[in-house]
Length: 486
Ligand code: NCD
Image (cartoon, rainbow, N blue to C red; front, side, top):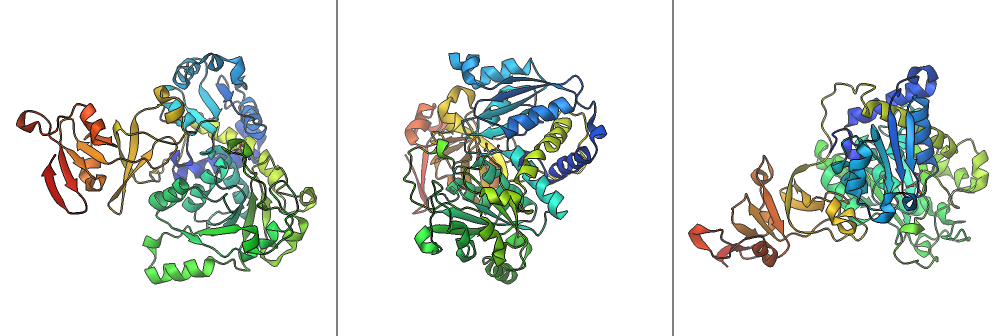
Protein backbone atom coordinates (compact mmCIF):
# COMPACT_ATOMS: atom_id res chain seq x y z
CA UNK A 1 0.00 0.00 0.00
CA UNK A 2 1.21 3.46 -0.81
CA UNK A 3 1.62 5.35 2.42
CA UNK A 4 0.04 8.51 1.00
CA UNK A 5 -3.31 6.87 0.25
CA UNK A 6 -6.39 8.57 1.67
CA UNK A 7 -9.20 6.08 2.10
CA UNK A 8 -10.71 7.21 5.41
CA UNK A 9 -10.91 10.63 7.05
CA UNK A 10 -8.75 9.11 9.79
CA UNK A 11 -5.87 8.59 7.32
CA UNK A 12 -4.97 12.26 7.78
CA UNK A 13 -3.76 13.75 11.06
CA UNK A 14 -5.41 16.92 12.33
CA UNK A 15 -2.48 18.99 11.12
CA UNK A 16 -2.67 17.40 7.67
CA UNK A 17 -6.36 18.25 7.45
CA UNK A 18 -5.44 21.83 8.38
CA UNK A 19 -2.73 21.81 5.68
CA UNK A 20 -5.34 20.86 3.07
CA UNK A 21 -7.73 23.58 4.23
CA UNK A 22 -5.01 26.25 4.29
CA UNK A 23 -3.64 25.37 0.86
CA UNK A 24 -7.19 25.17 -0.54
CA UNK A 25 -7.77 28.68 0.77
CA UNK A 26 -4.67 29.91 -1.04
CA UNK A 27 -5.77 28.24 -4.26
CA UNK A 28 -9.30 29.55 -3.89
CA UNK A 29 -8.17 33.14 -3.45
CA UNK A 30 -5.36 33.17 -5.92
CA UNK A 31 -5.48 31.19 -9.16
CA UNK A 32 -1.79 31.85 -9.89
CA UNK A 33 -0.78 30.02 -6.70
CA UNK A 34 -1.47 26.62 -8.22
CA UNK A 35 -0.45 27.17 -11.83
CA UNK A 36 1.79 24.35 -12.99
CA UNK A 37 1.76 22.43 -9.71
CA UNK A 38 0.44 19.32 -11.43
CA UNK A 39 2.57 19.49 -14.59
CA UNK A 40 3.36 16.02 -15.84
CA UNK A 41 1.01 14.24 -13.43
CA UNK A 42 -1.66 11.82 -14.60
CA UNK A 43 -4.67 11.10 -12.42
CA UNK A 44 -6.65 7.89 -12.90
CA UNK A 45 -10.32 8.64 -12.29
CA UNK A 46 -12.30 5.43 -11.79
CA UNK A 47 -15.95 6.05 -10.96
CA UNK A 48 -18.06 2.92 -10.80
CA UNK A 49 -21.06 4.68 -9.30
CA UNK A 50 -22.82 7.82 -10.57
CA UNK A 51 -21.10 11.10 -9.76
CA UNK A 52 -21.48 14.72 -10.80
CA UNK A 53 -19.62 16.84 -8.24
CA UNK A 54 -16.93 14.51 -6.96
CA UNK A 55 -15.68 13.39 -10.37
CA UNK A 56 -16.24 16.79 -11.98
CA UNK A 57 -14.35 18.67 -9.29
CA UNK A 58 -11.53 16.10 -9.01
CA UNK A 59 -10.94 16.19 -12.77
CA UNK A 60 -11.26 19.97 -12.91
CA UNK A 61 -8.81 20.23 -10.00
CA UNK A 62 -6.21 18.09 -11.78
CA UNK A 63 -6.61 19.94 -15.07
CA UNK A 64 -6.35 23.32 -13.33
CA UNK A 65 -3.14 22.15 -11.68
CA UNK A 66 -1.79 21.48 -15.17
CA UNK A 67 -2.02 17.67 -15.01
CA UNK A 68 -3.95 15.15 -17.06
CA UNK A 69 -6.76 12.73 -16.40
CA UNK A 70 -7.69 9.29 -17.70
CA UNK A 71 -11.04 7.96 -16.61
CA UNK A 72 -13.37 5.01 -16.43
CA UNK A 73 -16.95 5.91 -15.65
CA UNK A 74 -18.64 2.67 -16.49
CA UNK A 75 -17.57 -0.81 -15.37
CA UNK A 76 -19.12 -2.18 -18.57
CA UNK A 77 -16.49 -0.40 -20.66
CA UNK A 78 -13.49 -1.89 -18.81
CA UNK A 79 -12.16 -5.34 -17.91
CA UNK A 80 -13.99 -5.12 -14.60
CA UNK A 81 -16.97 -6.30 -16.63
CA UNK A 82 -14.93 -9.37 -17.68
CA UNK A 83 -14.35 -10.27 -14.05
CA UNK A 84 -11.03 -8.53 -13.38
CA UNK A 85 -10.50 -8.22 -9.63
CA UNK A 86 -9.98 -4.99 -7.74
CA UNK A 87 -6.47 -6.16 -6.91
CA UNK A 88 -5.55 -6.62 -10.57
CA UNK A 89 -7.16 -3.36 -11.61
CA UNK A 90 -5.09 -1.60 -8.92
CA UNK A 91 -1.84 -3.21 -10.12
CA UNK A 92 -2.53 -2.33 -13.75
CA UNK A 93 -3.61 1.27 -13.17
CA UNK A 94 -0.59 1.90 -10.96
CA UNK A 95 1.46 1.65 -14.13
CA UNK A 96 -0.67 4.20 -15.96
CA UNK A 97 -0.96 7.09 -13.52
CA UNK A 98 0.50 8.92 -10.54
CA UNK A 99 -2.57 8.76 -8.36
CA UNK A 100 -5.94 7.05 -8.55
CA UNK A 101 -9.29 8.38 -7.43
CA UNK A 102 -11.77 5.55 -6.92
CA UNK A 103 -15.52 5.52 -6.34
CA UNK A 104 -16.89 2.03 -5.86
CA UNK A 105 -20.14 0.49 -4.58
CA UNK A 106 -18.47 -1.90 -2.09
CA UNK A 107 -17.64 -0.79 1.44
CA UNK A 108 -13.90 -0.81 1.96
CA UNK A 109 -13.18 -1.04 -1.78
CA UNK A 110 -10.76 1.90 -1.77
CA UNK A 111 -8.80 0.50 1.19
CA UNK A 112 -8.52 -2.90 -0.51
CA UNK A 113 -7.56 -1.27 -3.83
CA UNK A 114 -4.90 0.80 -2.07
CA UNK A 115 -3.29 -2.36 -0.69
CA UNK A 116 -2.46 -3.48 -4.24
CA UNK A 117 -1.66 -0.11 -5.83
CA UNK A 118 1.76 1.45 -5.73
CA UNK A 119 0.54 4.97 -6.30
CA UNK A 120 -1.62 6.92 -3.82
CA UNK A 121 -5.31 6.03 -3.87
CA UNK A 122 -8.03 8.49 -2.86
CA UNK A 123 -11.44 7.24 -1.78
CA UNK A 124 -14.17 9.14 -3.65
CA UNK A 125 -16.89 7.14 -1.86
CA UNK A 126 -16.96 3.42 -1.02
CA UNK A 127 -20.55 2.22 -0.86
CA UNK A 128 -22.25 3.31 2.34
CA UNK A 129 -18.98 3.53 4.26
CA UNK A 130 -17.02 6.79 3.94
CA UNK A 131 -16.59 9.81 1.68
CA UNK A 132 -13.56 11.56 3.18
CA UNK A 133 -12.96 14.16 0.46
CA UNK A 134 -16.56 15.39 0.80
CA UNK A 135 -15.74 15.93 4.46
CA UNK A 136 -12.71 18.06 3.57
CA UNK A 137 -15.00 20.15 1.36
CA UNK A 138 -17.53 20.43 4.21
CA UNK A 139 -14.86 21.50 6.71
CA UNK A 140 -13.53 24.05 4.22
CA UNK A 141 -17.04 25.48 3.77
CA UNK A 142 -17.43 25.83 7.55
CA UNK A 143 -13.99 27.39 7.92
CA UNK A 144 -14.76 29.92 5.19
CA UNK A 145 -18.05 30.76 6.87
CA UNK A 146 -17.03 31.00 10.49
CA UNK A 147 -13.25 31.35 10.34
CA UNK A 148 -12.94 28.41 12.75
CA UNK A 149 -14.29 24.93 13.44
CA UNK A 150 -13.84 24.61 17.17
CA UNK A 151 -16.97 25.32 19.20
CA UNK A 152 -19.42 25.23 16.29
CA UNK A 153 -22.36 22.89 16.18
CA UNK A 154 -24.17 21.21 13.36
CA UNK A 155 -27.46 19.37 12.94
CA UNK A 156 -27.02 16.53 10.46
CA UNK A 157 -30.44 15.57 9.19
CA UNK A 158 -31.80 12.72 7.10
CA UNK A 159 -30.47 9.28 6.24
CA UNK A 160 -27.59 8.75 8.66
CA UNK A 161 -27.61 5.02 8.19
CA UNK A 162 -26.38 4.64 4.65
CA UNK A 163 -24.99 8.07 3.84
CA UNK A 164 -21.21 7.76 3.62
CA UNK A 165 -20.62 11.54 3.58
CA UNK A 166 -22.30 11.76 6.99
CA UNK A 167 -20.11 9.06 8.54
CA UNK A 168 -16.81 10.71 7.60
CA UNK A 169 -18.21 14.10 8.58
CA UNK A 170 -19.22 13.08 12.11
CA UNK A 171 -15.75 11.64 12.79
CA UNK A 172 -14.13 14.88 11.60
CA UNK A 173 -16.47 17.14 13.59
CA UNK A 174 -15.51 15.29 16.75
CA UNK A 175 -11.84 15.68 15.98
CA UNK A 176 -12.16 19.41 15.41
CA UNK A 177 -14.19 20.26 18.50
CA UNK A 178 -17.66 20.53 16.98
CA UNK A 179 -20.86 19.16 18.47
CA UNK A 180 -23.40 17.34 16.35
CA UNK A 181 -27.12 16.85 16.62
CA UNK A 182 -28.03 13.79 14.62
CA UNK A 183 -31.59 14.09 13.40
CA UNK A 184 -33.08 11.10 11.64
CA UNK A 185 -36.49 9.65 10.89
CA UNK A 186 -37.05 6.33 12.68
CA UNK A 187 -35.10 3.59 10.97
CA UNK A 188 -32.57 6.00 9.40
CA UNK A 189 -30.41 6.57 12.48
CA UNK A 190 -26.70 6.07 12.92
CA UNK A 191 -25.59 2.45 12.38
CA UNK A 192 -24.13 0.58 15.36
CA UNK A 193 -20.64 0.33 13.91
CA UNK A 194 -20.42 4.11 13.42
CA UNK A 195 -21.66 4.66 16.97
CA UNK A 196 -19.10 2.13 18.19
CA UNK A 197 -16.32 3.92 16.39
CA UNK A 198 -17.41 7.22 17.92
CA UNK A 199 -17.14 5.62 21.33
CA UNK A 200 -14.06 3.47 20.85
CA UNK A 201 -11.94 5.71 18.65
CA UNK A 202 -12.85 9.15 19.93
CA UNK A 203 -13.86 8.21 23.46
CA UNK A 204 -17.21 10.00 23.42
CA UNK A 205 -20.75 8.79 23.89
CA UNK A 206 -23.75 9.40 21.71
CA UNK A 207 -26.52 10.72 23.94
CA UNK A 208 -30.23 11.13 23.50
CA UNK A 209 -30.96 14.69 22.42
CA UNK A 210 -34.10 16.77 22.55
CA UNK A 211 -35.99 16.30 19.27
CA UNK A 212 -38.43 19.18 19.83
CA UNK A 213 -36.39 21.98 18.17
CA UNK A 214 -36.14 19.89 15.01
CA UNK A 215 -39.84 19.09 14.65
CA UNK A 216 -40.35 21.95 12.20
CA UNK A 217 -38.05 20.18 9.74
CA UNK A 218 -40.64 17.43 9.48
CA UNK A 219 -43.63 19.66 8.90
CA UNK A 220 -43.50 19.72 5.15
CA UNK A 221 -41.20 16.77 4.54
CA UNK A 222 -41.96 13.24 3.49
CA UNK A 223 -39.92 10.31 2.30
CA UNK A 224 -41.37 10.82 -1.15
CA UNK A 225 -41.53 14.52 -0.78
CA UNK A 226 -45.16 14.28 0.28
CA UNK A 227 -46.32 16.59 2.97
CA UNK A 228 -46.00 15.09 6.44
CA UNK A 229 -48.04 17.88 8.08
CA UNK A 230 -47.06 17.04 11.61
CA UNK A 231 -44.96 18.59 14.27
CA UNK A 232 -45.52 15.90 16.84
CA UNK A 233 -42.11 14.32 17.27
CA UNK A 234 -43.56 10.99 18.33
CA UNK A 235 -45.93 10.89 15.45
CA UNK A 236 -43.18 11.57 12.92
CA UNK A 237 -40.94 9.05 14.66
CA UNK A 238 -38.03 11.45 14.88
CA UNK A 239 -34.78 10.42 16.49
CA UNK A 240 -32.42 13.05 17.78
CA UNK A 241 -29.04 12.15 19.13
CA UNK A 242 -26.32 14.38 20.39
CA UNK A 243 -22.58 13.89 20.16
CA UNK A 244 -20.34 16.26 21.99
CA UNK A 245 -16.75 16.65 20.98
CA UNK A 246 -15.81 17.13 24.62
CA UNK A 247 -13.47 14.42 25.70
CA UNK A 248 -14.86 13.30 29.02
CA UNK A 249 -11.34 12.42 30.13
CA UNK A 250 -10.34 16.06 29.89
CA UNK A 251 -13.10 17.31 32.14
CA UNK A 252 -14.16 16.41 35.60
CA UNK A 253 -17.12 14.07 35.58
CA UNK A 254 -19.47 16.67 37.01
CA UNK A 255 -18.58 19.34 34.47
CA UNK A 256 -18.83 16.91 31.64
CA UNK A 257 -22.30 15.75 32.67
CA UNK A 258 -23.48 19.31 33.20
CA UNK A 259 -22.21 20.34 29.82
CA UNK A 260 -23.81 17.34 28.15
CA UNK A 261 -27.16 18.01 29.82
CA UNK A 262 -27.07 21.64 28.90
CA UNK A 263 -26.16 20.99 25.30
CA UNK A 264 -28.37 17.97 24.65
CA UNK A 265 -31.10 20.50 24.12
CA UNK A 266 -30.59 23.16 21.50
CA UNK A 267 -29.70 26.59 22.82
CA UNK A 268 -30.75 29.90 21.36
CA UNK A 269 -27.20 31.09 20.99
CA UNK A 270 -26.06 28.00 19.14
CA UNK A 271 -24.33 28.71 15.88
CA UNK A 272 -25.95 25.89 14.08
CA UNK A 273 -25.42 24.61 10.60
CA UNK A 274 -28.20 22.58 9.07
CA UNK A 275 -26.67 19.78 7.00
CA UNK A 276 -29.28 17.91 4.98
CA UNK A 277 -28.77 14.59 3.23
CA UNK A 278 -30.59 12.56 0.60
CA UNK A 279 -32.19 9.23 1.37
CA UNK A 280 -29.82 6.58 -0.06
CA UNK A 281 -32.45 4.44 -1.73
CA UNK A 282 -29.97 2.73 -4.03
CA UNK A 283 -28.27 1.12 -1.00
CA UNK A 284 -31.42 -0.10 0.70
CA UNK A 285 -31.69 -3.87 0.62
CA UNK A 286 -35.45 -3.87 0.45
CA UNK A 287 -37.48 -0.91 -0.69
CA UNK A 288 -39.00 0.27 2.56
CA UNK A 289 -42.46 1.75 2.82
CA UNK A 290 -42.26 5.47 2.35
CA UNK A 291 -44.51 6.39 5.24
CA UNK A 292 -42.04 8.00 7.61
CA UNK A 293 -41.67 11.77 7.02
CA UNK A 294 -38.23 12.94 5.98
CA UNK A 295 -36.64 16.22 7.08
CA UNK A 296 -36.96 19.17 4.75
CA UNK A 297 -35.72 22.74 4.97
CA UNK A 298 -38.18 25.38 3.82
CA UNK A 299 -38.17 29.18 4.21
CA UNK A 300 -40.55 28.60 7.12
CA UNK A 301 -38.04 26.41 8.95
CA UNK A 302 -35.36 29.06 8.51
CA UNK A 303 -37.62 31.62 10.16
CA UNK A 304 -37.71 29.54 13.38
CA UNK A 305 -35.83 30.96 16.33
CA UNK A 306 -33.55 27.93 16.64
CA UNK A 307 -32.35 28.28 13.06
CA UNK A 308 -32.18 31.99 12.59
CA UNK A 309 -28.38 31.90 12.43
CA UNK A 310 -28.17 28.64 10.54
CA UNK A 311 -26.55 28.21 7.17
CA UNK A 312 -27.81 25.32 5.05
CA UNK A 313 -25.40 22.75 3.64
CA UNK A 314 -25.99 19.59 1.59
CA UNK A 315 -23.46 17.34 -0.18
CA UNK A 316 -25.95 17.21 -3.09
CA UNK A 317 -27.68 15.90 -5.08
CA UNK A 318 -30.82 17.02 -3.29
CA UNK A 319 -34.09 15.35 -4.03
CA UNK A 320 -36.57 17.27 -1.95
CA UNK A 321 -34.73 17.86 1.34
CA UNK A 322 -34.17 21.53 0.62
CA UNK A 323 -37.04 23.43 -0.96
CA UNK A 324 -36.09 25.29 -4.15
CA UNK A 325 -37.18 28.60 -2.54
CA UNK A 326 -34.29 28.24 -0.07
CA UNK A 327 -31.87 28.72 -3.00
CA UNK A 328 -32.75 32.42 -2.88
CA UNK A 329 -32.09 32.66 0.88
CA UNK A 330 -28.72 34.17 1.65
CA UNK A 331 -28.07 31.36 4.15
CA UNK A 332 -28.04 28.61 1.52
CA UNK A 333 -24.49 27.37 1.02
CA UNK A 334 -24.80 24.11 -0.93
CA UNK A 335 -23.92 25.47 -4.37
CA UNK A 336 -20.94 27.32 -2.93
CA UNK A 337 -20.00 24.13 -1.04
CA UNK A 338 -19.99 22.18 -4.33
CA UNK A 339 -17.73 24.82 -5.95
CA UNK A 340 -15.26 24.58 -3.09
CA UNK A 341 -14.73 20.99 -4.22
CA UNK A 342 -12.20 22.23 -6.78
CA UNK A 343 -9.69 24.14 -4.58
CA UNK A 344 -9.97 21.53 -1.82
CA UNK A 345 -9.22 18.68 -4.22
CA UNK A 346 -6.44 20.70 -5.88
CA UNK A 347 -4.82 21.09 -2.47
CA UNK A 348 -5.26 17.40 -1.66
CA UNK A 349 -3.74 16.30 -4.98
CA UNK A 350 -0.79 18.69 -4.61
CA UNK A 351 -0.04 17.43 -1.08
CA UNK A 352 -0.61 13.74 -1.72
CA UNK A 353 1.59 13.71 -4.82
CA UNK A 354 4.35 15.59 -2.98
CA UNK A 355 4.08 18.69 -5.19
CA UNK A 356 3.47 20.63 -1.97
CA UNK A 357 4.94 19.69 1.39
CA UNK A 358 2.90 18.70 4.43
CA UNK A 359 3.77 20.73 7.51
CA UNK A 360 6.24 19.12 9.90
CA UNK A 361 3.79 18.69 12.79
CA UNK A 362 4.22 15.42 14.60
CA UNK A 363 0.64 14.70 15.66
CA UNK A 364 -0.52 11.15 15.27
CA UNK A 365 -3.48 9.60 13.50
CA UNK A 366 -6.64 9.27 15.54
CA UNK A 367 -7.75 5.90 16.71
CA UNK A 368 -6.64 3.34 19.17
CA UNK A 369 -6.00 0.54 16.75
CA UNK A 370 -2.92 -0.97 18.20
CA UNK A 371 -2.40 -4.08 16.18
CA UNK A 372 -3.91 -6.37 13.65
CA UNK A 373 -4.57 -10.06 13.88
CA UNK A 374 -5.17 -12.70 11.26
CA UNK A 375 -7.18 -15.83 11.44
CA UNK A 376 -10.25 -17.73 10.54
CA UNK A 377 -12.71 -15.01 11.24
CA UNK A 378 -14.76 -13.20 8.65
CA UNK A 379 -16.66 -9.99 8.18
CA UNK A 380 -20.33 -10.71 7.67
CA UNK A 381 -21.35 -7.43 6.03
CA UNK A 382 -22.71 -8.42 2.60
CA UNK A 383 -21.78 -4.97 1.22
CA UNK A 384 -18.12 -5.25 2.31
CA UNK A 385 -15.26 -5.94 -0.10
CA UNK A 386 -14.17 -8.74 2.25
CA UNK A 387 -17.34 -10.65 1.39
CA UNK A 388 -17.80 -9.44 -2.20
CA UNK A 389 -14.26 -10.27 -3.34
CA UNK A 390 -12.23 -12.11 -0.69
CA UNK A 391 -9.26 -12.46 -3.05
CA UNK A 392 -8.75 -8.67 -2.99
CA UNK A 393 -8.99 -8.42 0.79
CA UNK A 394 -6.42 -9.31 3.42
CA UNK A 395 -7.42 -11.50 6.35
CA UNK A 396 -6.17 -9.02 8.89
CA UNK A 397 -8.54 -7.37 11.32
CA UNK A 398 -8.13 -4.45 13.63
CA UNK A 399 -7.94 -5.14 17.32
CA UNK A 400 -8.27 -2.29 19.71
CA UNK A 401 -8.17 -2.25 23.47
CA UNK A 402 -10.42 0.43 24.85
CA UNK A 403 -10.65 0.39 28.62
CA UNK A 404 -8.88 -2.96 28.40
CA UNK A 405 -11.78 -4.50 26.45
CA UNK A 406 -10.66 -5.94 23.13
CA UNK A 407 -12.73 -5.03 20.08
CA UNK A 408 -12.21 -6.73 16.74
CA UNK A 409 -13.35 -4.87 13.65
CA UNK A 410 -13.18 -5.35 9.90
CA UNK A 411 -10.33 -3.26 8.49
CA UNK A 412 -12.47 -2.43 5.44
CA UNK A 413 -15.98 -1.60 6.63
CA UNK A 414 -15.43 -1.12 10.37
CA UNK A 415 -18.12 -3.63 11.38
CA UNK A 416 -17.56 -5.62 14.54
CA UNK A 417 -16.37 -9.14 13.82
CA UNK A 418 -16.94 -11.98 16.21
CA UNK A 419 -13.91 -13.87 17.41
CA UNK A 420 -13.99 -16.35 20.27
CA UNK A 421 -10.59 -18.05 20.22
CA UNK A 422 -7.14 -16.61 19.91
CA UNK A 423 -3.56 -17.79 19.79
CA UNK A 424 -0.43 -15.86 20.71
CA UNK A 425 2.49 -16.27 18.35
CA UNK A 426 3.03 -19.02 15.79
CA UNK A 427 2.98 -21.97 18.14
CA UNK A 428 1.18 -20.65 21.16
CA UNK A 429 -1.76 -22.07 22.97
CA UNK A 430 -5.24 -21.41 21.70
CA UNK A 431 -7.27 -19.64 24.31
CA UNK A 432 -10.92 -19.00 24.71
CA UNK A 433 -12.26 -15.51 25.29
CA UNK A 434 -10.63 -12.68 23.52
CA UNK A 435 -11.17 -10.69 26.70
CA UNK A 436 -7.89 -12.30 27.79
CA UNK A 437 -5.99 -10.41 25.08
CA UNK A 438 -3.68 -7.95 26.79
CA UNK A 439 -1.77 -4.90 25.71
CA UNK A 440 1.45 -6.84 25.40
CA UNK A 441 -0.29 -9.22 22.97
CA UNK A 442 -1.16 -6.48 20.57
CA UNK A 443 2.08 -4.54 20.75
CA UNK A 444 5.19 -5.24 18.76
CA UNK A 445 5.52 -7.88 16.07
CA UNK A 446 3.81 -10.69 17.90
CA UNK A 447 1.39 -12.45 15.66
CA UNK A 448 -2.07 -12.93 17.03
CA UNK A 449 -4.45 -15.38 15.38
CA UNK A 450 -8.18 -15.19 15.87
CA UNK A 451 -10.80 -17.86 15.32
CA UNK A 452 -14.60 -17.90 15.53
CA UNK A 453 -14.78 -21.58 16.44
CA UNK A 454 -12.51 -24.21 17.95
CA UNK A 455 -12.97 -26.26 14.76
CA UNK A 456 -11.44 -23.43 12.76
CA UNK A 457 -8.51 -23.26 15.17
CA UNK A 458 -7.97 -27.00 14.84
CA UNK A 459 -8.30 -26.79 11.05
CA UNK A 460 -5.47 -24.25 11.18
CA UNK A 461 -3.12 -26.94 12.44
CA UNK A 462 -3.86 -27.08 16.14
CA UNK A 463 -3.93 -30.42 17.78
CA UNK A 464 -6.03 -30.34 20.90
CA UNK A 465 -4.26 -31.90 23.84
CA UNK A 466 -1.15 -32.69 21.78
CA UNK A 467 1.04 -32.19 24.83
CA UNK A 468 4.68 -31.18 24.92
CA UNK A 469 5.49 -31.91 21.26
CA UNK A 470 2.71 -29.93 19.68
CA UNK A 471 0.42 -27.05 20.31
CA UNK A 472 -2.18 -27.52 22.99
CA UNK A 473 -5.65 -26.13 23.31
CA UNK A 474 -6.72 -24.60 26.52
CA UNK A 475 -10.21 -23.67 27.48
CA UNK A 476 -10.72 -20.85 29.91
CA UNK A 477 -14.25 -20.15 30.89
CA UNK A 478 -14.71 -16.45 31.45
CA UNK A 479 -17.75 -17.14 33.59
CA UNK A 480 -16.15 -19.42 36.14
CA UNK A 481 -12.63 -18.19 35.81
CA UNK A 482 -11.32 -21.77 35.73
CA UNK A 483 -9.14 -23.36 33.15
CA UNK A 484 -9.15 -26.94 31.99
CA UNK A 485 -7.56 -28.86 29.18
CA UNK A 486 -9.82 -29.56 26.22
C1 NCD B 1 -22.79 12.20 -2.02
C2 NCD B 1 -22.31 10.79 -2.34
O1 NCD B 1 -22.12 10.42 -3.50
O2 NCD B 1 -22.11 10.08 -1.37
N1 NCD B 1 -22.68 13.07 -3.12
C3 NCD B 1 -21.49 13.71 -3.38
O3 NCD B 1 -20.46 13.09 -3.56
N2 NCD B 1 -21.47 15.04 -3.35
C4 NCD B 1 -24.13 12.24 -1.39
C5 NCD B 1 -25.28 11.55 -2.06
O4 NCD B 1 -25.15 10.92 -3.10
O5 NCD B 1 -26.38 11.64 -1.50
